[in-house]
Length: 412
Image (cartoon, rainbow, N blue to C red; front, side):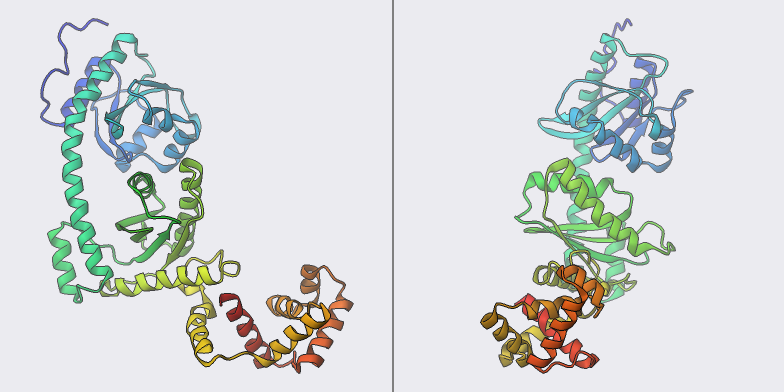
């Protein structure tokens, strides 16, 4: 491959011109993405391509399944830690052909990627050198885009904080500010809050930002960081999808998984406001509901470990208020206290037996299995519980009251 003049020693009017130049020099199809795999430019008139490239061009972003495969194969990790072009073998199950890629970097920060499809024209050493020059030429353009994007995100975050704190209280004012930001608000939304064990550092924020930008499970409209919390306003990608809540649950679980597998970040809490609001004056309400979920999950971690949405809390949403009243009145359930005193004096386990029995919806066999005792033994214990504490286990009101008092004791 002979090149007399350095084709990248000039100022390019646009990223499209740069990408077409790279394609002409290397005789291969080229795509250029930002650091979060959103398509910025691609070479035109390419007779050869593959399904992954077609999907990227149509969707203006790399499909999420392709990104997962690249992480699983260690490709993104290698690109993030190298200034050199890297040859990538085909991953046929996601439609990805043979490629060479290079990260566009400024110091340790990745600004984007250049991907070269080399099905028919494998790159030689000189071509690899030209690709490194192309990455340098792209750096200036991506730095300019980064500044513009940062200003846009600052505007979005300021607007989001106003919504979260109820400082914009009319739909007309909300629409006016959204129009100024050239932002189309989706028809419905909910607020999500992810809570970490420590304040979110710059490095952790970069990792979080990558995940929420590349996800294609839900649409993230806004996001802000408040100490150890990531707060987001999100909507379904398809407003008519019948299982939108399940999709949000999948997104939450996937976020946990990716943070653990890619960045070794664990013990993250999550809470979401109820259902999907259409009125944007209710953003603050959705936010407070998400915080309530986190508060209750902290108080009752075992019972609510699989609960993320406010509407799924059931009676747990009332327990904090009930617990506060109980503390103010210094109320102690006398029936439970009798069992507690008996257990302490006789080294018995009647209170635990009652708790398990009620938690199993009074199913004797299930409760006996959990307690690792015979059903006859459990029935004897239940008889003793009724006798000692004066409890009527056939009275639903009585059982519900006992169950709630037991739950409140867990949250104390």
